[in-house]
Image (cartoon, rainbow, N blue to C red):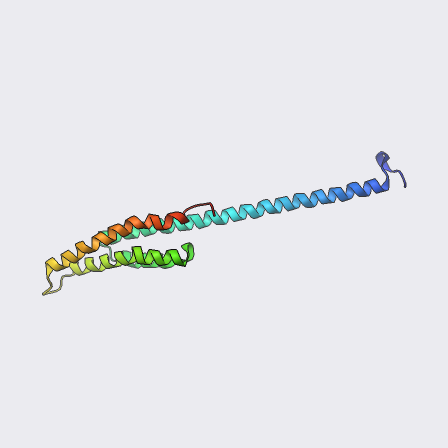
Length: 155
């Protein structure tokens, strides 16, 4: 064994070199893990933002349907179709059945009541409109219950 700088042998230098390389590799691994975790958390935050935006837009669309805006029905249907990709098929189907359908019926009853054709029974149309308001009101209350489990950053 040959003694070199600082009184270390060549085997000791090789040992410290190997340990140094292992430490550098471990540091690189830790940095890569942290980057992966950061990217994963960013994806969660982005998904949360998109889900929350859809929830808010859907609520506004439902309000516009109640106010009598016929374009809001088209927007509601588009948002419910988009919900499939953000919330999953089960939740999207539940949204369609429990929220979309009652508001679709309300919009149709409202349109029929407002467009009163000749010979139509005005009181019957008004009654259908009022009858459609109950399920639509309940559907508006169910909306937060359906999406709340998905509006979390903990996945």
